[in-house]
Length: 369
Image 1 (cartoon, one colour):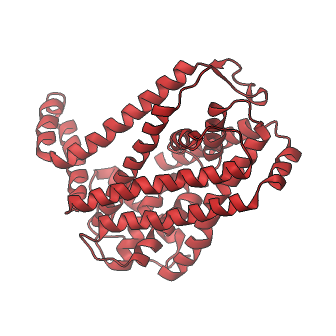
Image 2 (spheres, one colour; image 1 turned 90 degrees about the vertical axis):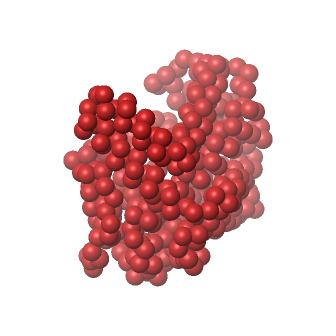
Image 3 (cartoon, one colour; image 1 turned 30 degrees about the horizontal axis):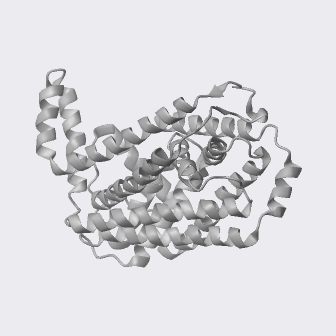
C-alpha cells in the first residue's frame, strides 16, 4: 500500500510540474530553438555526460575494491543497470537494483553490496556540498525574481531575493550537517548508541530498540570501508564527477546561446538536486525539467521561456538516452531481467520496512517473465 501511494504521488507531482511548465508553450518557438542550437556544443555536452558515467564507476571502485576485488566492467554494468532502473521503474529503486546486480554477478552477500551503495551515495553528497557551497558563495540575486508571464497562473508575486538567499543558506547548512552526522555516526557508533538509548529509552523501550536497530544496521554497513585513504580518494573523484555535471550543463547553455553568468550551472544543479529528490515519476520527468528551467530563471528571469523549455528537454534527453543505450546491453550481458530485479527490489524493501533488518541472502533467482 505504501509503495502504491508513493507511486501515485510521484506520478501526480510529475504531471503537475509538466502541466505547469508546458501549459502555454509555443511549440513553434521550441522547435526553432532546437533548430538554432549549435551541434558542436551539444556533442560536447553528450560526451561530458557519457564520461561522467565512467568517472562515477571509478569513484565506486575505491569503495568496493578495498573489500571485494571486482573488475571495473562489472561495477560499470551494475551501475548502468541501476541507472536504468531509476529511469524506467517506479519508486526509484535503482540503487537497490545496483546492489542486487553486483551481488548476483560476484556472489557477494547482499548486505555488503547494499553497504557499498550506501557509502557511494555518501561520497556523492560530498560533491553535492561542493555545488551548494559554490552557489551560496557566488550567487547573490540583486533583485526580487518574478516568474515569466506564462507561469504566473498560480503565483504572480515576487520571489524575494532574501528568501532565495535564505533558502539556499538553509539547504546548504542542512546538507553539511547531514553529511557531518553520517560521518560522525560511522566514527562514533558506540557514542551514538549510548545517547540514543538514554534519550529514546525515556520515551519508550520499543522506540529505543527500533532506533538502535537502525543505527546498528547503518553503521555496520558503513564499516565495510576499511581504508580511510580510499574514502578520501572516492570523495575527491566525486568533486570531479560533479564538475563534469556542471560542464555538461555549460555545453547545453552554450548550444542555445543563453545569456547567463558563469555560475548558472551551479545554481541549476543545486535546484535540480532538490527537485529530483522529492517523489516523482520514473525518469524524473517533470521534476528534472522544472529544476533546469527554475534554476535558469533565478539567474536571469528575462530569458525566453520557450527557449528554456527546449534547454530542459535536451538536458533531460541527454541524460536519458545514454542510460538506455548502455543500460539495456548491460542487462543482456548480465543475463538478467529488469522486471526480475524490480520484484526482488520490492521484496527487499518490504522486508526491511517490516523488521528493520537487512536480509542476509539475496532473493532466489527467477526467470524473467
